Structure formats: structure tokens, C-alpha cells
Image (cartoon, rainbow, N blue to C red; front, side):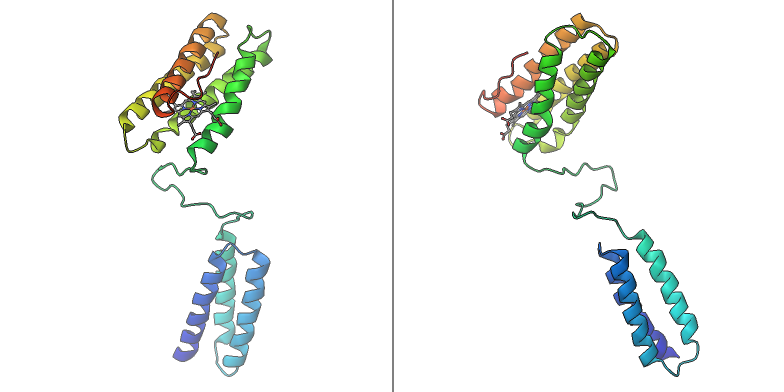
Length: 202
Ligand code: HEC
């Protein structure tokens, strides 16, 4: 009985490994069937086999329902302590695909006072995306002059937040002021860290 249990224990360990992999439920069930067949051969004469097999099957089903569902990509470490783990490491891609399109949309929306609620919602949305995205700049500070980097990110965020607030209040004058000062803060970082490239115009 002891040896039968250790055989089962070994195979359950194997099964656990399999079900932790992001393989499909079908794969896990196929492996379970295979392993169960192995038990039948190994433990033909072992009493209590059915009980153990059933327990194993239940454990497998429970484990596979907890297995992460990953649609073709493996997420990097999960932030247990609230640590931000970037999806895209490259600062260039981050600016090009998060900041640039948002800036270009805002430039259009802010060319004239929004005519209706839909227009204000567009400003609100893009202002919030930029302001929140500035939070994601903190973890990307370079080793040299990191404090300045954080200062620029904070200034951009605060002016972005003001733009968001003005759009909420549908105050175009305040929004225009915040939009311009936000861009000054964006540009201040570009001046210092990008040798003056990417100077953005309102
Ligand atoms: C803390 C520094 C910092 C702040 C703040 C900052 N940026 Fe940038 N930005 C960069 C760096 C660095 C690059 C260059 C990335 C690269 O190409 O490697 C860049 C590049 C860009 C580019 C050019 C992207 C391209 O593909 O050519 C745009 C547009 C841009 N930023 C928009 C903004 C906007 C809008 C803000 C303000 C809301 C902002 N940035 C705030 C650091 C910053």
C-alpha cells in the first residue's frame, strides 16, 4: 500500500507540473487518462486503488481549473506587491504608441473649444491617459540624472491632471492653459534627455 501510494505520489507530482503549464484543459485531461492507465497496470492488485485514483482525478480537475488561461503569451511576473511591471521595456515604443497618438488626438481636439459633450469627453479621455501614463515613467528613470527625470514626469502628470480637471468642468480657457503648460513639461524632459528632439507644439 505504501509503495502504491509513493508511485501515485510520484505521478501526481508529474501531473501537477503538467497542469501548471499553460497547456489546455484537454491536454491535462489527456495526460490524466494516460497516467490513470499507468496506475491500472502498476496497481492491478492494490486494494484502495479506486479511492486513490478518484482522489487524484479530483485534485487534477481542481488544479486545472486554477491553471492560468494564457492566450498565446506568457505574462511576466505578477505584481504581488503593487510593483509595476512594464509590458514594453523600450522607452521609444512606449512614447511612440502610448504618448504620441494621444498627443496627436489632443492637438486636434484642443484646436477649438469642443462643441458638445462628445468633444469634451475626447479631451477628458486623452488628458487622463497622458496624466496616468506619466506615472509609468517613474520606473523608467535612467541611472544618470534620475531625479530630474522624475521631476519632469511629475510636472507633466500634474499639468495633465489639470487639463483633465478643466475638461471635466468644460472650461476651455483653463484647458488651453493646462494643455500648453503640460506640453512645456513634456518638452522639458525631451530637451534634457533627448537633446531637444521631439519638441511638441500645442
Ligand atoms: C521623463 C521624461 C519624459 C517625459 C515627462 C515625457 N517624455 Fe516623451 N519622450 C521621452 C523620451 C526619452 C523620448 C525618446 C524615446 C526614444 O525614441 O527613445 C520621448 C519621445 C516622445 C515622442 C516621440 C515619439 C516618437 O516615436 O518619435 C513623443 C510624441 C512624446 N515623447 C510625447 C510626450 C508627451 C505628449 C509627453 C507629456 C505628456 C511626454 N512625451 C513626456 C521622455 C519623456
